[in-house]
Amino acid sequence: MVELIDRFFDHVESYYRKPSGSPTSEVTNFRVALRAVKEHYGETEAGAFSPTRLKVVRAEMVERGWVRTTVNKAIWRIKSMFRWAVENELLDESVYGRLTVVRRLQAGRGGDGTRPAREPVNVEPVDDKHVVAIKEHGAPQIWAMVQLQLLSGARGGELFRLRPTDLDRRGDVWVATIQDRKTAYRGKRRLLYFGPAAQAIIMPFLEGRLDDSFLFSPAEAYARLRRAGVKGRRRQNQGDSPRKTRRRIGAHYTKDSYARAIKRACEKAGVPVWRPHQLRHAFVNRIEQQFDLASA
Image (cartoon, rainbow, N blue to C red; front, top):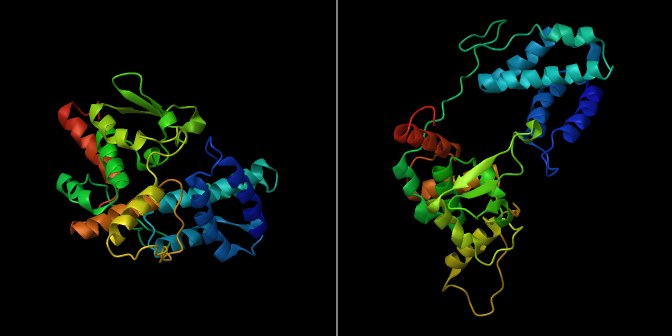
């Protein structure tokens, strides 16, 4: 199994790529799913892997507190490895065939000595007053992206890498073409539309910026907050103090750094912590209220 996992992961790392060449989130998802197999059956002959062993791995995921939908997706990824192995004539087709009989976990049902998996929590739209509360407790870049999500329904990840060159500003409504989109491999285009309110938010970040540099820079946000925090408390010609964390500041925000920034702002503002994806749900609710469900 160890050898099969290593060979399959070479395929995963080369196959799951964005148009830019960077790996998609599926690489991490496969790594996590296959780690559970490796821990239990790393030294087992790949051809001897059975439905019973797959259900042992599944039960371990449930015991670790994984939600049901995550467990089902992980089991699908494990099955995908065996399908790939059969396709590439590394294993007999009967090995994959017998694993296909393992059914998906159903809500509230365990079976085979396994307790029911934890159910995912529905994502609720964030309360407007909890959004407004963080305005003064974070970097301008964070607040700008929060507002743009509410105005456009964009995913956070679609704003992280937004550059001036991605914006078509010729019309009354600006159009952004998202390059590293999650459906790019299907040949689908992803466009974001920014009206006057969104344009007013973006404009300050366009001034003096190179066409191919990211609009919302965490390095710029860090430098601004650092200057604000030490203003009036530094000696003349005093050098920079060492950072208290080894975390590197990237060229653009990531899903995790954006969520962390919002979490810190919520804690400072004394409001319940909410996550960026709740902004998309708030956007959908607003569109449904203003227009109809079909529009949403």
